[in-house]
Amino acid sequence: MKMNQPLGAAHYGPMIIRLALGAYFILAGMGKLNLLAAFVDQVRSFGVLPGNIAAVYGILLPYVEVSVGALLVIGMWTTLSGVLAGLMILSFVLAFGVFPGTHDIFNKDLILLAAACSLLYSGPGALSIDNIGKQSPA
Image (cartoon, rainbow, N blue to C red; front, side, top):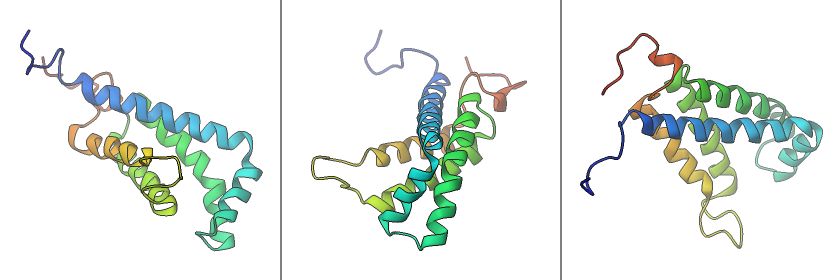
């Protein structure tokens, strides 16, 4: 084994990123759906968006997170899902900043944004609906 060679087939890399990002969005969305009214109030309290827009954003965000997460997990419409994931994450970064807390050394959302952007260049990878019927690289 050479230290500069991949350990496995390259098409598994995007799959790992897609599954991790998809699971993150599903779990984040489900957590918000369980307490939707409280989440809407929290979005309003940030003061980033006007009242009615904040309410609509707070109501729709959990549903979009779960939907985009599910699409990422199954590897369907990966480019669109990656763009939507990236836009959601970008909205979080814009709302909270690069250094959102006093104890945070870095905003994890920037790493998630990089993961979403990487899917735009790599595609869905292995085991995805987008690649059904396509020959996967060896």
